[in-house]
Amino acid sequence: EQVEIEMRCAGYIQRQKRQVRRLERMEARAIPYGFDYRSVRSLSAESVEKLLAVRPATLAQAARIPGVTPADIAVLMVLLERMRREEAKA
Image (cartoon, rainbow, N blue to C red):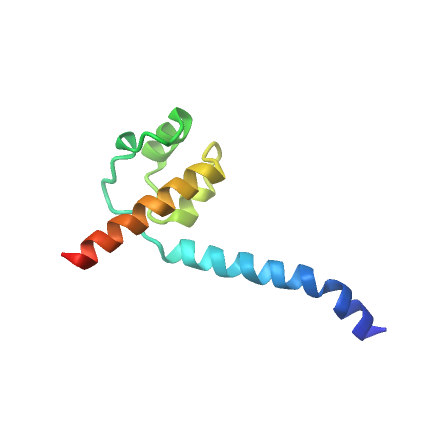
């Protein structure tokens, strides 16, 4: 019976593990101090307002702000990764 339960729950457990790993990566992804959210045209006006008010230090903190959408977080992730790669080239 235990094996049967584990088999049924395996998909859910794997999904939870992926979500935990993603959150850990977001916690590790710092947002530079003084980052100009206004310059990111893809962010919604509400998100810019909230991000400027809170000034999160990491993507995970930004993701927990009410009014900041998953799409906004995705935009920030792409932008921060691009910035990181450009800095690595220099």
